[in-house]
Image 1 (cartoon, rainbow, N blue to C red):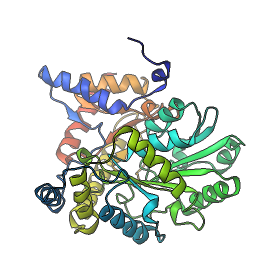
Image 2 (cartoon, rainbow, N blue to C red):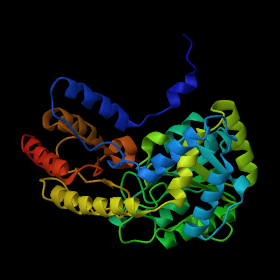
Image 3 (cartoon, helix red, strand yellow):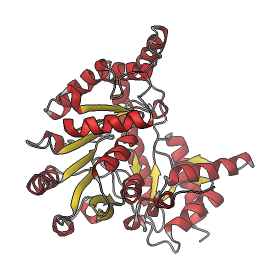
Length: 387
Protein backbone atom coordinates (compact mmCIF):
# COMPACT_ATOMS: atom_id res chain seq x y z
CA UNK A 1 0.00 0.00 0.00
CA UNK A 2 1.27 3.47 -0.86
CA UNK A 3 1.09 5.82 2.15
CA UNK A 4 1.57 9.54 1.51
CA UNK A 5 4.81 10.88 2.95
CA UNK A 6 2.97 13.70 4.70
CA UNK A 7 1.52 11.15 7.11
CA UNK A 8 4.95 10.93 8.75
CA UNK A 9 4.52 14.57 9.82
CA UNK A 10 1.53 13.83 12.05
CA UNK A 11 2.08 13.48 15.77
CA UNK A 12 -0.30 11.94 18.26
CA UNK A 13 -1.74 12.28 21.74
CA UNK A 14 0.35 10.13 24.05
CA UNK A 15 -2.50 9.94 26.56
CA UNK A 16 -4.29 7.43 24.33
CA UNK A 17 -1.12 5.40 23.78
CA UNK A 18 -0.48 5.21 27.53
CA UNK A 19 -4.09 4.19 28.06
CA UNK A 20 -3.67 1.33 25.60
CA UNK A 21 -0.57 0.08 27.42
CA UNK A 22 -2.33 0.45 30.76
CA UNK A 23 -5.36 -1.49 29.53
CA UNK A 24 -3.05 -4.25 28.34
CA UNK A 25 -1.46 -4.49 31.79
CA UNK A 26 -4.88 -4.38 33.41
CA UNK A 27 -6.04 -7.26 31.24
CA UNK A 28 -3.14 -9.28 32.66
CA UNK A 29 -4.33 -8.61 36.20
CA UNK A 30 -2.38 -5.48 37.19
CA UNK A 31 -4.34 -2.85 39.13
CA UNK A 32 -4.02 0.51 37.34
CA UNK A 33 -4.86 4.03 38.51
CA UNK A 34 -5.48 6.31 35.54
CA UNK A 35 -4.07 9.82 35.94
CA UNK A 36 -3.04 10.35 32.33
CA UNK A 37 -6.27 11.24 30.53
CA UNK A 38 -7.81 14.71 30.27
CA UNK A 39 -11.40 13.70 30.92
CA UNK A 40 -13.74 14.75 33.74
CA UNK A 41 -14.84 11.73 35.78
CA UNK A 42 -18.37 13.10 36.18
CA UNK A 43 -21.51 12.11 34.30
CA UNK A 44 -22.99 14.48 31.76
CA UNK A 45 -25.71 16.49 33.57
CA UNK A 46 -29.16 14.96 33.23
CA UNK A 47 -30.82 17.96 31.56
CA UNK A 48 -28.28 17.73 28.72
CA UNK A 49 -28.87 13.99 28.25
CA UNK A 50 -32.61 14.62 28.31
CA UNK A 51 -32.15 17.28 25.63
CA UNK A 52 -30.53 14.72 23.34
CA UNK A 53 -33.23 12.13 24.03
CA UNK A 54 -35.97 14.67 23.31
CA UNK A 55 -34.22 15.65 20.07
CA UNK A 56 -34.01 12.01 18.98
CA UNK A 57 -37.69 11.45 19.73
CA UNK A 58 -38.56 14.64 17.86
CA UNK A 59 -36.86 13.34 14.72
CA UNK A 60 -33.69 15.43 14.78
CA UNK A 61 -31.74 12.57 13.24
CA UNK A 62 -30.96 14.02 9.82
CA UNK A 63 -28.33 16.30 8.30
CA UNK A 64 -27.98 19.79 9.67
CA UNK A 65 -26.35 22.85 8.17
CA UNK A 66 -22.60 22.15 7.80
CA UNK A 67 -21.79 24.98 10.20
CA UNK A 68 -24.38 24.03 12.83
CA UNK A 69 -28.05 24.42 13.71
CA UNK A 70 -29.37 27.93 14.24
CA UNK A 71 -30.60 27.41 17.85
CA UNK A 72 -27.11 26.31 18.91
CA UNK A 73 -25.35 29.11 17.05
CA UNK A 74 -27.69 31.61 18.70
CA UNK A 75 -26.94 30.08 22.11
CA UNK A 76 -23.20 30.25 21.39
CA UNK A 77 -23.49 33.91 20.37
CA UNK A 78 -25.26 34.64 23.68
CA UNK A 79 -22.59 32.73 25.63
CA UNK A 80 -19.71 34.51 23.92
CA UNK A 81 -21.33 37.90 24.58
CA UNK A 82 -22.04 37.04 28.23
CA UNK A 83 -18.50 35.80 28.92
CA UNK A 84 -16.46 38.10 26.69
CA UNK A 85 -18.58 41.19 26.07
CA UNK A 86 -18.46 40.88 22.28
CA UNK A 87 -21.33 39.42 20.27
CA UNK A 88 -20.35 37.47 17.16
CA UNK A 89 -22.52 37.32 14.07
CA UNK A 90 -24.28 34.02 13.46
CA UNK A 91 -22.31 33.48 10.24
CA UNK A 92 -19.05 33.74 12.23
CA UNK A 93 -19.84 30.59 14.24
CA UNK A 94 -18.91 27.09 13.08
CA UNK A 95 -19.92 23.98 15.04
CA UNK A 96 -17.73 20.88 14.74
CA UNK A 97 -17.64 17.30 16.11
CA UNK A 98 -15.29 18.20 18.96
CA UNK A 99 -13.15 21.30 19.41
CA UNK A 100 -10.03 19.68 17.90
CA UNK A 101 -11.33 19.90 14.27
CA UNK A 102 -11.20 23.68 14.53
CA UNK A 103 -7.41 23.45 14.98
CA UNK A 104 -7.19 21.06 12.02
CA UNK A 105 -9.44 23.04 9.71
CA UNK A 106 -8.09 26.51 10.51
CA UNK A 107 -4.52 25.29 9.89
CA UNK A 108 -5.58 23.83 6.53
CA UNK A 109 -7.33 27.06 5.57
CA UNK A 110 -4.73 29.58 6.73
CA UNK A 111 -1.19 28.16 6.82
CA UNK A 112 0.94 27.65 3.73
CA UNK A 113 4.31 25.98 3.32
CA UNK A 114 6.96 27.92 5.24
CA UNK A 115 4.52 30.07 7.22
CA UNK A 116 5.54 30.38 10.86
CA UNK A 117 3.17 29.62 13.73
CA UNK A 118 4.07 30.53 17.31
CA UNK A 119 2.60 28.05 19.76
CA UNK A 120 2.94 27.32 23.51
CA UNK A 121 5.51 24.71 24.51
CA UNK A 122 4.89 22.61 26.51
CA UNK A 123 1.47 22.60 24.94
CA UNK A 124 -1.36 20.52 23.53
CA UNK A 125 0.52 18.24 21.08
CA UNK A 126 -1.97 18.66 18.24
CA UNK A 127 -0.84 22.28 17.73
CA UNK A 128 2.67 21.28 16.65
CA UNK A 129 1.41 18.19 14.84
CA UNK A 130 -0.95 20.17 12.61
CA UNK A 131 1.55 22.98 11.94
CA UNK A 132 3.99 20.39 10.65
CA UNK A 133 1.32 18.51 8.69
CA UNK A 134 0.27 21.54 6.62
CA UNK A 135 3.89 22.47 5.91
CA UNK A 136 4.22 25.35 8.33
CA UNK A 137 7.17 26.06 10.60
CA UNK A 138 6.41 25.40 14.25
CA UNK A 139 7.95 28.10 16.44
CA UNK A 140 7.78 27.08 20.13
CA UNK A 141 7.12 29.76 22.75
CA UNK A 142 8.56 28.35 26.00
CA UNK A 143 6.30 28.47 29.04
CA UNK A 144 8.44 28.95 32.16
CA UNK A 145 7.78 27.43 35.56
CA UNK A 146 9.31 30.49 37.28
CA UNK A 147 6.64 32.59 35.56
CA UNK A 148 3.77 30.37 36.63
CA UNK A 149 3.99 28.68 33.22
CA UNK A 150 3.46 31.91 31.34
CA UNK A 151 5.98 33.25 28.83
CA UNK A 152 8.81 35.77 28.78
CA UNK A 153 7.58 38.88 26.98
CA UNK A 154 10.92 39.73 25.40
CA UNK A 155 11.33 36.15 24.23
CA UNK A 156 7.89 36.30 22.61
CA UNK A 157 8.82 39.46 20.70
CA UNK A 158 12.07 37.88 19.54
CA UNK A 159 10.20 34.99 17.90
CA UNK A 160 8.13 37.21 15.62
CA UNK A 161 9.05 37.60 11.97
CA UNK A 162 7.59 38.60 8.63
CA UNK A 163 6.72 34.92 8.16
CA UNK A 164 4.61 34.74 11.35
CA UNK A 165 1.05 34.04 10.23
CA UNK A 166 -0.54 32.70 13.41
CA UNK A 167 -0.14 32.83 17.18
CA UNK A 168 -1.76 30.08 19.27
CA UNK A 169 -2.64 30.71 22.91
CA UNK A 170 -4.29 28.40 25.41
CA UNK A 171 -5.54 29.70 28.75
CA UNK A 172 -6.19 27.97 31.12
CA UNK A 173 -3.43 25.82 29.76
CA UNK A 174 -2.98 22.14 29.05
CA UNK A 175 -0.70 20.59 30.38
CA UNK A 176 0.43 23.04 33.09
CA UNK A 177 -2.81 24.56 34.40
CA UNK A 178 -1.30 28.03 33.99
CA UNK A 179 -3.28 31.06 32.89
CA UNK A 180 -2.29 34.17 30.92
CA UNK A 181 -2.54 37.54 32.65
CA UNK A 182 -4.38 40.54 31.24
CA UNK A 183 -0.99 42.09 30.40
CA UNK A 184 0.08 38.95 28.51
CA UNK A 185 -3.14 39.00 26.51
CA UNK A 186 -2.83 42.73 25.75
CA UNK A 187 0.70 42.28 24.42
CA UNK A 188 -0.33 39.45 22.11
CA UNK A 189 -3.37 41.41 20.90
CA UNK A 190 -1.35 44.56 20.12
CA UNK A 191 1.29 42.52 18.32
CA UNK A 192 -1.30 40.63 16.31
CA UNK A 193 -3.15 43.77 15.26
CA UNK A 194 0.04 45.69 14.39
CA UNK A 195 1.46 42.86 12.29
CA UNK A 196 -1.78 41.41 10.87
CA UNK A 197 -1.31 38.01 12.54
CA UNK A 198 -4.24 35.69 13.16
CA UNK A 199 -4.63 34.51 16.76
CA UNK A 200 -6.08 31.09 17.59
CA UNK A 201 -7.22 31.26 21.22
CA UNK A 202 -8.03 27.87 22.76
CA UNK A 203 -10.36 28.46 25.70
CA UNK A 204 -11.87 25.03 26.31
CA UNK A 205 -10.90 25.18 30.01
CA UNK A 206 -12.22 28.70 30.59
CA UNK A 207 -14.79 27.57 33.17
CA UNK A 208 -12.35 25.41 35.14
CA UNK A 209 -10.43 28.09 36.99
CA UNK A 210 -9.66 28.62 40.66
CA UNK A 211 -9.89 32.05 42.25
CA UNK A 212 -8.59 33.85 39.18
CA UNK A 213 -10.21 35.83 36.37
CA UNK A 214 -10.23 34.41 32.88
CA UNK A 215 -8.96 36.92 30.31
CA UNK A 216 -10.00 36.33 26.70
CA UNK A 217 -8.21 38.01 23.83
CA UNK A 218 -11.56 37.93 21.98
CA UNK A 219 -12.77 40.63 24.38
CA UNK A 220 -10.15 43.15 23.26
CA UNK A 221 -11.26 45.82 20.79
CA UNK A 222 -10.40 44.91 17.23
CA UNK A 223 -9.69 41.23 17.90
CA UNK A 224 -13.09 39.97 16.78
CA UNK A 225 -11.88 40.29 13.19
CA UNK A 226 -8.37 39.02 13.89
CA UNK A 227 -9.04 35.98 16.02
CA UNK A 228 -10.37 32.42 16.04
CA UNK A 229 -12.01 31.59 19.36
CA UNK A 230 -11.94 27.86 20.04
CA UNK A 231 -14.28 26.41 22.66
CA UNK A 232 -16.26 23.28 23.33
CA UNK A 233 -18.41 21.23 25.67
CA UNK A 234 -16.18 18.32 26.69
CA UNK A 235 -14.57 19.81 29.78
CA UNK A 236 -17.15 22.17 31.28
CA UNK A 237 -20.09 19.80 30.86
CA UNK A 238 -18.29 16.44 31.05
CA UNK A 239 -19.22 15.67 27.44
CA UNK A 240 -15.99 14.24 26.04
CA UNK A 241 -17.72 11.40 24.20
CA UNK A 242 -20.34 13.67 22.67
CA UNK A 243 -17.75 15.31 20.38
CA UNK A 244 -18.97 18.89 20.30
CA UNK A 245 -16.98 22.03 19.80
CA UNK A 246 -17.08 25.30 17.93
CA UNK A 247 -15.04 28.11 16.51
CA UNK A 248 -15.89 31.81 16.28
CA UNK A 249 -13.97 33.56 13.53
CA UNK A 250 -14.07 36.23 10.82
CA UNK A 251 -16.88 35.61 8.34
CA UNK A 252 -14.54 35.14 5.37
CA UNK A 253 -12.68 32.38 7.20
CA UNK A 254 -15.89 30.76 8.49
CA UNK A 255 -17.12 30.26 4.92
CA UNK A 256 -13.84 28.50 4.03
CA UNK A 257 -14.09 26.27 7.11
CA UNK A 258 -17.66 25.39 6.16
CA UNK A 259 -16.40 24.27 2.75
CA UNK A 260 -13.82 22.02 4.41
CA UNK A 261 -16.55 20.52 6.60
CA UNK A 262 -18.66 19.76 3.53
CA UNK A 263 -15.66 17.96 2.06
CA UNK A 264 -14.94 15.96 5.21
CA UNK A 265 -17.73 15.16 7.67
CA UNK A 266 -20.76 16.99 6.20
CA UNK A 267 -22.01 18.25 9.57
CA UNK A 268 -22.06 17.64 13.30
CA UNK A 269 -24.59 15.19 14.76
CA UNK A 270 -27.89 17.05 14.86
CA UNK A 271 -29.42 15.62 18.04
CA UNK A 272 -26.18 16.21 19.96
CA UNK A 273 -26.31 19.87 18.93
CA UNK A 274 -29.72 20.14 20.59
CA UNK A 275 -28.15 18.69 23.72
CA UNK A 276 -25.50 21.44 23.49
CA UNK A 277 -28.26 24.05 23.45
CA UNK A 278 -29.46 22.65 26.77
CA UNK A 279 -25.90 22.78 28.10
CA UNK A 280 -25.58 26.49 27.33
CA UNK A 281 -29.08 27.50 28.38
CA UNK A 282 -29.69 25.13 31.27
CA UNK A 283 -28.68 25.17 34.95
CA UNK A 284 -24.97 25.48 35.80
CA UNK A 285 -24.96 24.05 39.34
CA UNK A 286 -23.48 20.67 38.36
CA UNK A 287 -20.62 22.24 36.40
CA UNK A 288 -19.89 24.66 39.23
CA UNK A 289 -19.94 21.82 41.75
CA UNK A 290 -17.51 19.85 39.59
CA UNK A 291 -15.04 22.75 39.62
CA UNK A 292 -15.24 22.93 43.42
CA UNK A 293 -14.40 19.23 43.61
CA UNK A 294 -11.50 19.74 41.21
CA UNK A 295 -10.14 22.51 43.43
CA UNK A 296 -10.11 20.18 46.47
CA UNK A 297 -8.36 17.51 44.44
CA UNK A 298 -5.86 20.04 43.12
CA UNK A 299 -4.90 21.13 46.62
CA UNK A 300 -4.63 17.52 47.75
CA UNK A 301 -2.46 16.30 44.88
CA UNK A 302 -0.13 19.32 44.94
CA UNK A 303 0.53 18.82 48.66
CA UNK A 304 1.11 15.11 48.09
CA UNK A 305 3.48 15.61 45.16
CA UNK A 306 5.55 18.16 47.07
CA UNK A 307 6.04 15.56 49.81
CA UNK A 308 7.69 13.13 47.38
CA UNK A 309 11.50 13.02 47.19
CA UNK A 310 12.86 14.70 44.05
CA UNK A 311 9.46 16.16 43.09
CA UNK A 312 8.28 19.78 43.21
CA UNK A 313 4.96 21.09 41.98
CA UNK A 314 3.51 24.59 41.75
CA UNK A 315 -0.22 25.01 42.21
CA UNK A 316 -2.09 25.30 38.88
CA UNK A 317 -4.63 28.08 38.47
CA UNK A 318 -6.94 26.32 36.05
CA UNK A 319 -7.83 23.13 34.13
CA UNK A 320 -7.43 19.79 35.98
CA UNK A 321 -3.76 18.98 35.52
CA UNK A 322 -0.62 19.28 37.62
CA UNK A 323 2.80 19.51 35.98
CA UNK A 324 5.34 18.49 38.61
CA UNK A 325 9.06 19.05 38.09
CA UNK A 326 10.94 15.71 38.29
CA UNK A 327 14.35 16.93 37.12
CA UNK A 328 15.99 15.77 40.37
CA UNK A 329 15.01 12.16 39.72
CA UNK A 330 17.72 10.17 37.94
CA UNK A 331 15.46 9.12 35.10
CA UNK A 332 14.22 10.89 31.95
CA UNK A 333 10.54 11.83 32.13
CA UNK A 334 9.56 9.39 29.36
CA UNK A 335 11.41 6.61 31.20
CA UNK A 336 9.71 7.64 34.43
CA UNK A 337 6.32 7.45 32.70
CA UNK A 338 7.01 3.83 31.74
CA UNK A 339 8.49 2.97 35.11
CA UNK A 340 5.54 4.29 37.11
CA UNK A 341 3.06 2.46 34.88
CA UNK A 342 4.84 -0.89 35.11
CA UNK A 343 6.12 -0.72 38.69
CA UNK A 344 3.49 1.36 40.48
CA UNK A 345 0.47 0.73 38.28
CA UNK A 346 -0.03 4.50 37.90
CA UNK A 347 -0.66 5.90 34.42
CA UNK A 348 0.85 9.38 33.98
CA UNK A 349 2.25 11.28 31.00
CA UNK A 350 5.78 12.40 30.32
CA UNK A 351 6.11 16.16 29.95
CA UNK A 352 8.06 15.50 26.77
CA UNK A 353 4.75 14.44 25.16
CA UNK A 354 3.89 18.14 25.20
CA UNK A 355 7.07 19.40 23.60
CA UNK A 356 10.77 19.75 24.32
CA UNK A 357 10.21 22.32 27.06
CA UNK A 358 8.30 19.71 29.05
CA UNK A 359 11.21 17.30 29.31
CA UNK A 360 11.75 17.73 33.07
CA UNK A 361 8.10 17.27 34.00
CA UNK A 362 5.22 14.82 34.26
CA UNK A 363 1.56 15.58 33.67
CA UNK A 364 -1.00 14.11 36.02
CA UNK A 365 -4.73 14.61 35.70
CA UNK A 366 -6.67 14.98 38.95
CA UNK A 367 -9.93 14.09 37.23
CA UNK A 368 -10.07 11.12 39.57
CA UNK A 369 -11.24 10.56 43.14
CA UNK A 370 -9.18 11.72 46.11
CA UNK A 371 -9.15 8.09 47.26
CA UNK A 372 -7.45 7.02 44.02
CA UNK A 373 -5.15 10.04 44.00
CA UNK A 374 -4.04 9.20 47.55
CA UNK A 375 -3.43 5.58 46.56
CA UNK A 376 -1.49 6.67 43.45
CA UNK A 377 0.73 9.04 45.43
CA UNK A 378 1.64 6.29 47.88
CA UNK A 379 2.43 3.88 45.05
CA UNK A 380 4.64 6.52 43.43
CA UNK A 381 6.42 7.11 46.73
CA UNK A 382 7.23 3.43 47.06
CA UNK A 383 8.39 3.18 43.45
CA UNK A 384 10.62 6.26 43.66
CA UNK A 385 12.33 4.80 46.69
CA UNK A 386 13.54 1.92 44.50
CA UNK A 387 15.33 4.17 42.01
